[in-house]
Length: 174
Image (cartoon, one colour):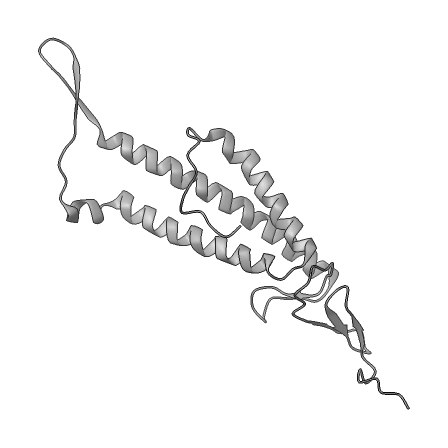
């Protein structure tokens, strides 16, 4: 007596997928590291169920990670540019320069264009970082490698432009 409950479905634990008799791939939420080319990525409508779709998704995720690194650089550049523009100097009678800091009200500090843009970009950076974290939590080694390659490529293209070595305390999740 056969007590197999697969009912003509084969299950592959290494890939975290179930393959139906007609070759249709059904992704499973496998919570161990695995190599596979069949995943639901973030939402059920983004199903990478063929090798081509999976490779496209991995490349897209890699580019998203490069863009994330670029966004981090752009925010830092914008921050320093805004801070530099706030500093003004006046020349005294003896020819020396004196730094003058203008007083801004709280309203002016909150509702100015650079601060509003920084707020939007900060929210976007947090959103992208959490999406990348959720992709890592799929435990698919192919996607993890895609994110690591994207982070390295993004660092290569953007980190050399940085003017400081201060770590962003707002960075999270990957």
